Length: 121
Length: 113
Image (cartoon, rainbow over all chains, first blue to last red; front, side):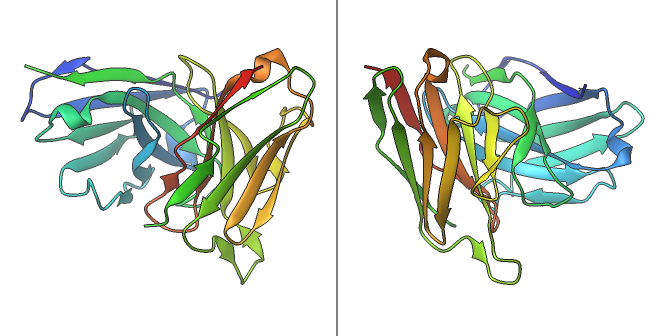
């Protein structure tokens, strides 16, 4: 079955860049679907960061767009998130997820387990 | 941005009783051309990612027990657990996918009374 797994540093210093990778198994990214990044600050709700298609087309939350880059590497079957100039407000559990249908804006049906990223010096 | 407001923030229900969660959007998420409401519901248990329960406002995802049902249209939506089970203790979120940015409700925590 399709599985997603986030990976990357759990601690990032303020003003630096947060970098995470989501490795997909059980499905080839280049076969289709849109793939997304979301985050959840401790004890709070969910925030959509952005979505990418295997072609590389990206769609970002306007509130984060100036700091976010999402990219895809179909040869490695993974997609990545970079968030620059981080502050304590970026501390959260970061999730990667698959969009449920062939629509850019949709629900998410398969999620990674999440990875906690803390921004602190 | 479409703001999603859930109520209540939390509720406690006896085992076997009904739990009802409300979600209100700041603007309609009903797309008139296909008459579909772009609204999903998720369940999140502690330490786990969200699990998709419902999409198109009322369609259960495969494998979701039929004690979970959802209804509503336009701006007002409801998720109902008809007979609460111990494994249903979780936080429930609604999400609109009508327009960017995708937005979520603040969550409703369901506990056993």
